[in-house]
Length: 209
Image 1 (spheres, rainbow, N blue to C red):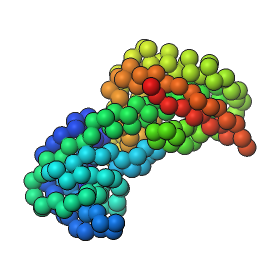
Image 2 (cartoon, rainbow, N blue to C red):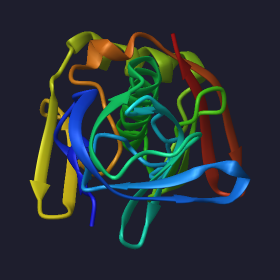
Image 3 (cartoon, rainbow, N blue to C red):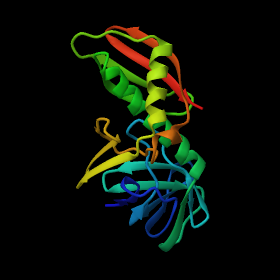
Image 4 (cartoon, rainbow, N blue to C red):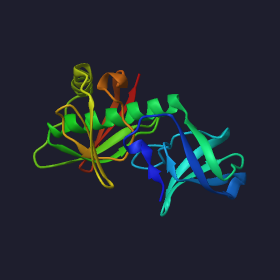
């Protein structure tokens, strides 16, 4: 199994060991590491990108036995330096953290988050009503979320084996394996683009600037 360093480590560079490298489809190579800083696609967010010993990592995926890194060129077995693209990681962390704040904010209005899609250009959180609910308008929700950001709570991580919870300050924690900002002000500003209610579900579309 691949040790998932990104669960508790925000670092972007680390020395690891390449345990396997084999040709894969589309002319790529599937690389397995003993441990990784790369967040794989899943949990509502796309994967990190970067390099393994200079080989470009184009995507990272979860597998039964760990994490698979897909590179454009082959990588030698043995010690290697991995480098995560910091700009891509920061954007994904900002979007995912903003999604958590939107989820928490709408709980106060009687909605429960059931799905998050924190991809650049198409980020949204989907809710269902938990009892009596009402819906804030777009500007009200945006004001609430950005008000939380101004408080600038620090991230809180709770790790128990493979179980991981993420929260900020005294706000609720949620089971989550994704990447998040260290402090809320790193999110920047959240822009609520659209709120859509259909068939008992509420979808909030958003971005960060």
